[in-house]
Length: 195
Image 1 (cartoon, rainbow, N blue to C red):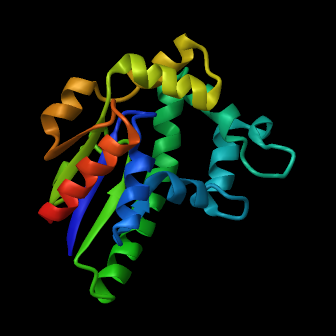
Image 2: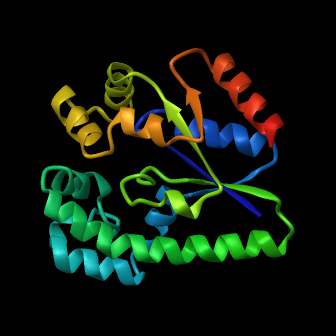
């Protein structure tokens, strides 16, 4: 099975590309969704996170308040590393299970949408890496619109990731998401046809 990494900076449009790939009939695993699954109440990572960050990050439903946790980890790099060390091994395990299932089902090409692909030096895990890209000023604006963060908070989250230049340099394929939805659809269709 060909395993393709899909990445890009925060708010670059990775999820939009993943949705287009699904419309083309491809299986797409999402690291963020798997990460949400492993931190749910009752999962082993849940208690580890509470022990590390305290009960104040539990919301009214008894789940982890991801926004509260995000404020902590994006302002403290050692806290972010601690969180990643709790979550990432469990996400890798779930990802491997999905890959094994798809391989057994005869899936020929599958994608893994993973924001921290380069930060975690996962390049060698993939047969190809598609990077969704747009200028940082647009990235900041999209992140603010989506989350309500201030400009400074948005930039802090962007700076916590590998630089745009580094992502572009390490990409197998580059998807420019600074245009229209139609532009994005055409680029994805062209790349899919090349598979």
